[in-house]
Amino acid sequence: MDTIDGMKAFARVVESGSFTEAARRLGISTALASKYVRQLETRLGAQLLNRTTRSVRPTELGQAYWERCNRILSEFDELEDSVADQHGRPRGQLRIAGSRAFGEDLLVPAIVAFLESHPEITVDLTLDERMVDIIAEGFDVAIRVGELADSSLIGRRIAFYPYYICASTAYLAEYGTPNTPQDLLDHRCIINTRINPSNQWQFSINGQKSQVTVPSTVRVNTARSTATLVKAGQGIGLCLYSTVKDDLESGALVRVLRKFEAYDRSVYAVYPQSRHLSGKVRAFVDHMLAAFAEYRA
Image 1: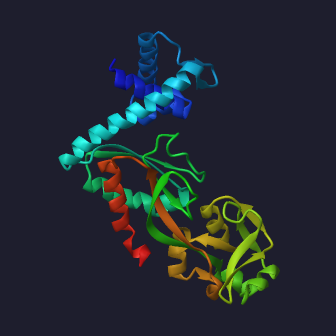
Image 2 (image 1 turned 45 degrees about the vertical axis):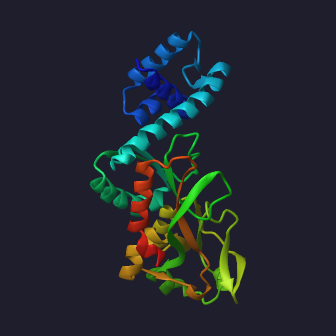
Image 3 (image 1 turned 180 degrees about the vertical axis):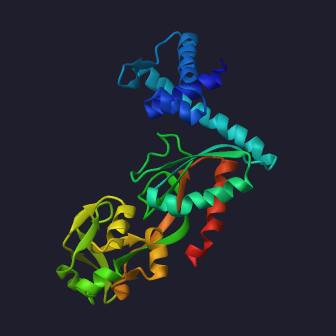
């Protein structure tokens, strides 16, 4: 066993809490990942992990080893990347996280073009509505929609991406079209709880941001399910543009209260600070900037 391989396997197990997930991230079998960690423990003469049928957690000694191990692996990866960069060949596995709706609609097609341009890079993409911990979970870069919280991460804006208040033509024919935000009090509304957990929608009224509490017919927690319900005529919803783009262009859905819209959101490529930005991350971010240039116009 190469010591670096053992350290990588151990670090991924600690980050994911699973030999199976660690093996998937490394592109090896679960049995091999387990073997690497056992050999590392034997070499060190210490138990690094507490293993049960339900979980795998580092021992106190293992936690301390993991913290130093991560720093060494990071420097090792930077060294390899810097050599590859000098030869102009970004390569290796790129782990990317993103939201499901934006990812399925726009990110995946952009990644297809990226892979065609960079055949020596492989991609491990995770789409999830939750906010991943990039460093703890071992991601190289994440694509996030919405303003960034203060952090030690670096964020590059790659696109402006709006939410629109939409309704189906069938719904408007039956219930009428609201002319002001207050009119929504008499309508059926679909609430995305990830964006508006308290049923408050934001509007721009006379140049000022204002919150209006709207009634909810259905509450869901993803952009795609919101769009599906709106398309089915179940109510008016605040829809992520990528989930309703085709329906707006076909006329099946209509934007309402357009002059009051206040949900232009930004899309960022976010990655950890580093003394050396790896060639594969740099190449990916540059590709995303080019792929979404029309959304920054």
